[in-house]
Image (cartoon, rainbow, N blue to C red; front, side, top):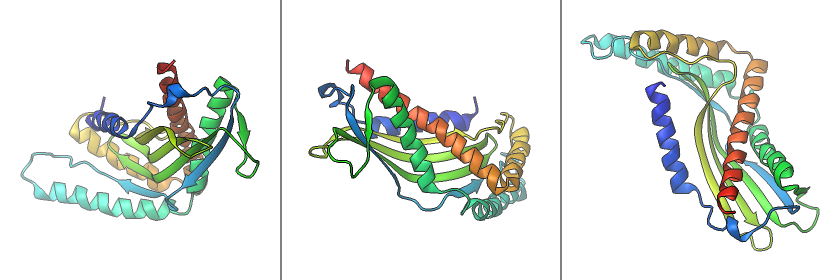
Length: 229
């Protein structure tokens, strides 16, 4: 496993531990309840970043590291400009929320209620705080920062919350190697892949990857409920 992937995984565990709260789940049953789903995009623009490894780490050739830095800087600016208006962030938030809805319908036979349809039992609020396409020697990833809350509809008190801060592998893109020289080449290839994607390819890949992230979020919720039963 790539060192960066390990670091991201450890960081994600730490963030989830600091942010997640499941203590009140045991007080509630979700079977055949009425639920409002509320997707919210707190960011209006998707960004992109490119990172290219120094092919000669530890060498005395400062130009090697400097060249990698400027390649990363220029690539990030070009990539952001390429994807900025391609994907609706509200659409990404909607996909994350829809995965939770589908999971709760299948497992607890809940009924979905619209915001203006009267009383409900719960509100599931999915807040998308950040969405970014990133390219590095590990491959091409969709970086998502999400906060999800399950609220009691009557008093809006928080029953369950979780934070999601993950780099999810973009659909149809390979991961890199482990040797610095190989990683440097893969980093450039990943950057080229990201910069060469047309609008339809970016949109399809982002929305498909958001589906993967949505399943991670809903699976975390189901496991959290199961632990309280």
